[in-house]
Length: 64
Image (tube, rainbow, N blue to C red; front, side, top):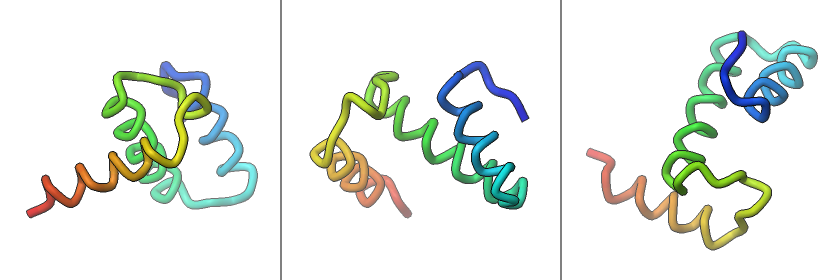
């Protein structure tokens, strides 16, 4: 499972080595990519609690 993102590749490799299921890895990568894209492709290391709260609030507004 390879993506164009070195960060997402690292996360996928990390999870697969620890024997997470492929479906779990795919789901995590989807959510992480969504979070990164929501914040204009900023690296997660450059963000903090405020960005997490803002993203979660956004999810509650768009959820059906």
